[in-house]
Length: 325
Ligand SMILES: [Zn+2]
Image 1 (cartoon, rainbow, N blue to C red):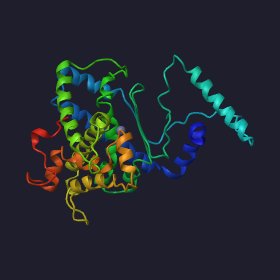
Image 2: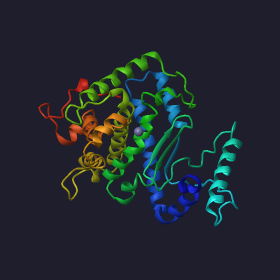
Image 3: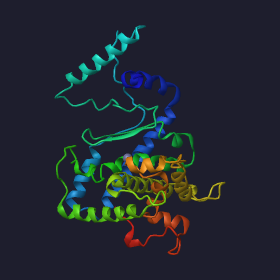
Image 4: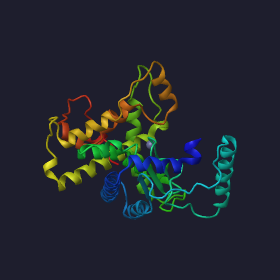
């Protein structure tokens, strides 16, 4: 309730104490690197025809990326909050509803955050608003580390949300955020053929003995993971090309690229209580963490290079079966 109606005020207090100017500049740098990686990905994508490629680049240019914490806070109406809890909550609810009604027919102010606050571990893609929001709490790992591998492993979440703009549903929203066809038929066919490969992979996953997953239920999140990891990897590669001295092993003995994939894997560590995994598989759009890692990395050529994976290794996937999105 506090987050819902006084989230802006709470965010302002939290940001003052927990999100320094240095945090903001690093978070801005990560955002810039990820948008550049996305443009580069679209420019190289073999499944896009020239016209759809140009429109897709427009779609990226039309995004508002809200990363870290807001710079502007929605004003909380004054004179409503008092010592009387009931009157305060009622007043805030009425003010919020009035704001929504007043806003009908006018564009949403793009500088404010909606529904997500910087202090919660949360990320959202609103295709109709053309806004991506990823909170400071999500990229904490990037803000607290001096290792570029950790920065870009955290930036995966930014890539995942960008990926939703090109998943099986998000790709149906055009560059103006309108739900209408805008891809050429040949692009949609080539895209569907790659998505079909990923669905076949998901159908073969068995998270719990005898329990398989419904590819239709999880394909959107799996596409988000695949595109997100590719974008983050590309952003890291770009950084390492400019800072080759940081590419080699650190004190851990792992190269930057290896540390990147290890950090990605560590971010999905999960322990399931009995029955919880089966319930998750039945209800969630997200594959269990183990599969968000092992099921996805084997589609990335860079992962094979990083760990010298050979055809007889258990996670090896023939090149033609890797999803080339
Ligand atoms: Zn997602």
